Structures are given as structure tokens and as C-alpha cells.
Image (cartoon, rainbow, N blue to C red; front, top):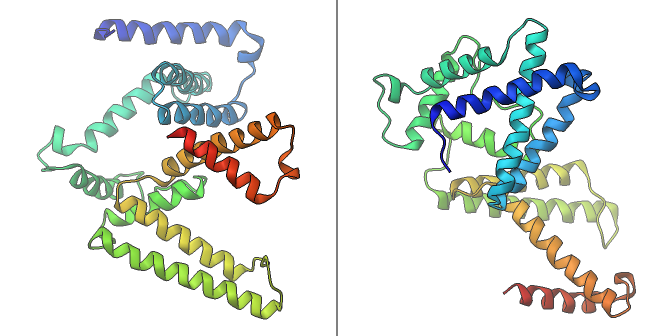
Length: 273
């Protein structure tokens, strides 16, 4: 169902009215602050991300509403402090969108999405309160996997990138080799065999390896966070199936050999296909 512009405006106004009343009459809503809401905001965004990955439209709609509530709530708190309100938030966003899209609202030429990204980086550096350096716009608190993707993406937008996607695989292989060499060096130094004790050098080489794999995914249009989450879900589904099958056999996983668990794993995997 599609709504016209007036219906959309009225719907947003209704939510604002409801929140205004809750802020006065509800004991929980009345005491919330930026700090108390922040953990919930993070949780709501992750729940939205789960719905997006699953292409679950009913839940996407629901979770978008929860995220919108938080945007309105922070704006309400800003209004109470006489700092800003939702109109200021919307106006600032409109101005930023217009300023950052000169290929739509101005005379700048951009024939594809990549050219738009290149223009954005230059615009952000010129803004009064914008990024002072190319990478300064990447939030410090981003999860490391997402941060790696963003810093690589921003560096690429100013030309610091591989000439072709295929070139990255030599770097990935180089990082695997360097990690293996550091692993063997650690074992030789410690004089122990079996499971190695991580050293700062091993951790650094492992980080380099992960960074190169993130780079490979970026060059082939795959976001590492989305790809890894799909694999997480797949692993959880298969492992739960292994555990459930073992339970039906009256056994616990700790009582099974690795070979037995692997057999159940392959059974779970074959059922997916």
C-alpha cells in the first residue's frame, strides 16, 4: 500500500504527538536520557540489520519504526534542552543532502555511483565542520570489521586502491604466508608443539590477514560483515541440528568423538540441499 505525501506527514506527526504525551505521562519514558537510550539504540539497529539480512519485510517495517522512535526521542530531548528539535534535524539533513549532491542540484557531472562517491569525499573535506582528513569521518567506535571496510573504501575513493580486483589475491597469499611464518617462529621460540600461545606478532599478522580479506571482499562487491553474518547463521543452524540429532540418540556432544560429530554435521549439511 502506498501513501501520498500528506498521509506520510500526518503519520509522522501522529508519532511525534504520541511521544510528546509519553514523555509527560509514562514513568519510563519520562526519565530517559541520551545515555540511557544509547544501548537500546544500538540493539534496535542490530535488530534492523537482522531483518534486512533475512529480507523479512514485516520485521523490517517494525524495526524501522523502533529506530525512528529513537531518532524522535533524541530530538525530543534536544528540544527540552532548547538545543534543537526534529525540525532542525530534518532541515540539517535536507541541506546536507542538497550540498552533497551537486550532480543532482547543481552542475557537477557524475555518471555512475563510483563517481558520486569520489565527489562526496572531496565535498566532506571542504565542509566547514566536515572531515579534516580522508579517514577522520570513520567513527572510532565502529566494530573493527566494518571499520576496516570503511577505511579501505574511503582510501579507494581518493585513488589509493588496487588497479584490478585480481591483484588483491597476491596480497592475501602474502599475508597467509607471513602469518604461517610467524606461527612457526613462535613455536620454535617456545619449544612447544601443538596449540600455539598467541604472541603480539602473531596477532598483528592475523590482523593483516583479516584486513586483506576484507579488502578482497570490498573489491568484489561483498561486505564482510554481511558475508560473515550469513556464515554465522549457517553454522548455528547446522550445529543446532547436530546437537538435536545427538540428543535424540540419547547422547551429549561431549560424549561423541570428532568423527561422529563430523558425520552428523555432514547429515545436517546435506538436509539443507
